[in-house]
Length: 116
Image (tube, rainbow, N blue to C red; front, side, top):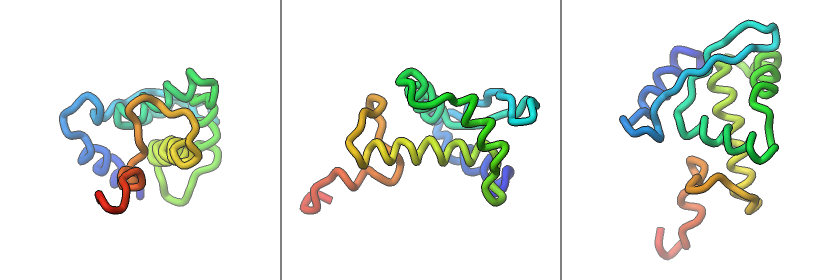
């Protein structure tokens, strides 16, 4: 998903709530150039929580992802994926999670089969 497609995707996620609002923040890439990172607020909340826990350094993630791009993914897309992936692993392994956060695509995993 190229940058323009990703921008449309997160724009479509923005449902007008503070939780899903698209927020732009500036970070330096691996070359020291400022890049705008676009993420829904809930992903910024995940990043902040992970940093508070000492689990990640988001600045380092930005530099690493910038230096090691994935296919045609934008930097924002790559970072959103890694935040989702980290949260998914925590959810799967029953590790500490940010309050009231379940990774997208995992909601039904917690519902007993006879209630789904």
